[in-house]
Amino acid sequence: MKSYRGLPRCFVPGVTADEPIRLPTNEYEKFHRILRLASGDEILVLPNDGTAIRCRYQGKTVVPIDVFQPETELPIRITVVQALPKGDKLDDIIRSCAELGVQKFVLFASDRSVVKWDQAKLEARIKRLETIAAEACEVAFRTHLPSVEFCASWEAIFDQPHLIVLSEAEGISAPLSQFRNQDISLLVGPEGGWSPRERERFKGKEVTLGPRVLRVDHAAAAAVASLVIP
Picture 1 (cartoon, helix red, strand yellow):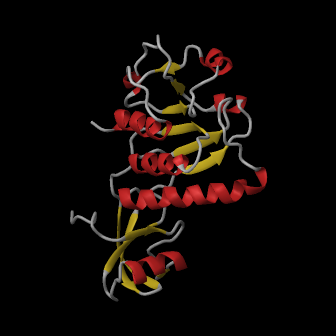
Picture 2 (picture 1 turned 45 degrees about the horizontal axis):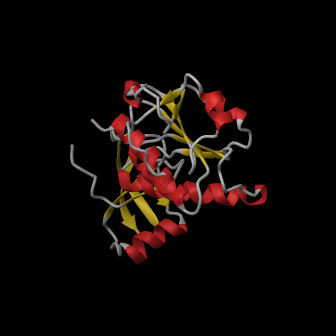
């Protein structure tokens, strides 16, 4: 099959190849002003259903040519359950993990999270992170967008299926690598690590990446990469 990895692409959830597709304004601006595409150039439109629609660019409207299904998604389901870090570190975590194939992000405030999200700004924060994830997925040629949600209840994070906890504590011998090729929810802490109360709650679920302690903005991506890259 012809390689389409080099074609410009964008997500337009819900569209089909049955008729011309109207591009969202931000995507049109990207193709027109940044990439400077000419009428007739080929692009890919990703409907967020596992397929890719090859299209002919005609400005704000693109014309479908054919449909195919790239094999770019993971065969397993990985959820990153991330304690809120400081600053813009969360942007990097979402971006790198989305590129690696994470299907879901659950964010929460742990005991040692300095950042506390204002409920009034929650929707805007989530929308911004969804945009970052979508851009990362376009770059990585993914065909499904990950979900991003905030969990206000600390106890509710334990409802995530196949939960394991990434720990920096000494004495943890269970390697994360034992969970390769398995669906998991990976719980990652904030700067400063887990509190004694949290560690007590996590007993029996803790795993390690090895003897080194990673920065919070590197830990999740390093863990996911160790699970999905051969």
